[in-house]
Length: 454
Image 1 (cartoon, helix red, strand yellow):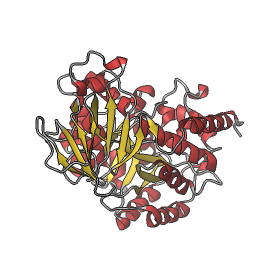
Image 2 (spheres, helix red, strand yellow):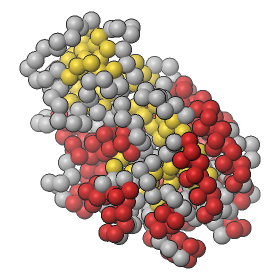
Image 3 (tube, one colour):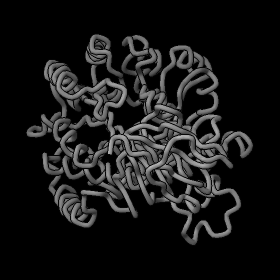
Image 4 (tube, helix red, strand yellow):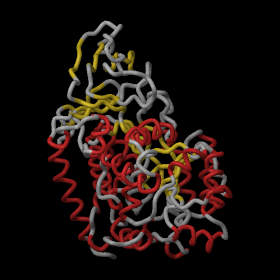
């Protein structure tokens, strides 16, 4: 079917992620977009088949920029409820230290499928918990992602600073710095695909300033530079983190980041809430990317990301659901709505529009992950797209289908295409059986949550 041409015809609305007119749909050939069809115009490309999209909204595939897939096993755990970040982490680390290979495989599959069902064609994960027996966690994640067929940026996370050395995590889930760096190089060499249409990419991601040493932060930056891969970490999520960095290092988190040689355009940061105006200016000058996590920031009462100021300064803003334990939901199209509502509290209704927050989830996220061939509709871009049906009670009476997609609360795709292949049709994945996966995942969640805190 490499030369087959498909016309996605006459959508109720289409978001291109740019100023191009595709009011009468898209033409796809193989794995690429070959024509945008303006309103009232017929395709110039000879068409082999078409799909009537007259009651559907088409968007570029959504791109999640930050997650912790393993946390789907610990959603709404009673002992972690109603806590801010640090106490929440300390409680859950006592559960997460019991992760095993079957759990990480199943959690990755389930989180990935959940994201895809909500419109994501490219997903990012930050895995940093490596208890004994789970040294091959990223390899297991690659295997699980390959069963789903989506694109992924998997980050080799790390923690080297346990409780005995003043860090937050228990010593049983940290690793030595030599092991972390050796495994990082192994994973880059084995899996990282930097080609235009690459499916699996690897980035390096020490967990946070309060769980790794300064030397590991610096050595990781050097290793990433040598291999031309990206860097990722949590930063400025809470005021507690700012206070920790001042006590531990005598400087604020961004100053510490610069001290570790991280301030550059190959770095993206999760959360990015508690920056002052000078720090925002420096982040923009360095072209650092930001993974904006509205639901997580609200659930943990961390604060509101200053997206408009960061973007104006020069940062790319992407959207992220964050870990399921700090969101309890891995739904990308719902996260777009959360961003709309949360950011309007800060900036008002005229500035924060449906188009702007959809842009965070598509073109912005693609820029954050430095994947230039996805995130918008243009000729020769990869055919990664989501189709949402308006045939639901929630959309009845909608005047603007594109705005209604967000404000009326879309939650599930009708169809999802990655690289020209339909992976989800009629809200069902082509190969992964949702019910069976859920049953297995639920059993593993009960197992890890019920294990003694030893």
